[in-house]
Length: 242
Image (cartoon, rainbow, N blue to C red):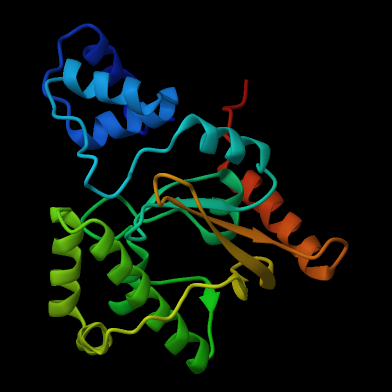
């Protein structure tokens, strides 16, 4: 659940591995479903400073984990205020594919949007333009909310260098809002699936839950279920023959 090896976890528990990274501590906090206070204690025990309150939230509270458990039949992804993916459920992976590895900005939706990252979401030219404007506006709001977040500022700086289109939109100070909307996801085995996409904000943390749903009893609902079946088959463990 934490995305680390059993051997490394054992060495941490036995005190044979020291100085775990903040990424490891954040993953352990999510896997153990720690409260903010428990998470901060874990960081201190590990010799790391707890995440600053002024920084954009990256901790997924137990209440959000429980919500994801209850919504296991719906694709749910959790993003931080700068639109970097923190975690997602199995239904999301079945629909959208495995999230990019946690290197650089590869898990950041805004970065992938402006640097040509692959996506299964199909957009018209108008939809792509609206999405880009909304993404820049939302990132600007995050930067204004967390002005002391060094990592968020680095993301904005790197986007300026990587994408002239981002730089132009940033300088225009666009103020579009992110609304609920329909999206068409092109699944490699099932084909196009048109779904409603809702973005929910977690009070007190600015975490974003992106949830995909289909109209009940519709062909798209059937395709969504089929995508999950295909995903379960693909990721099911294969046992050697006896």
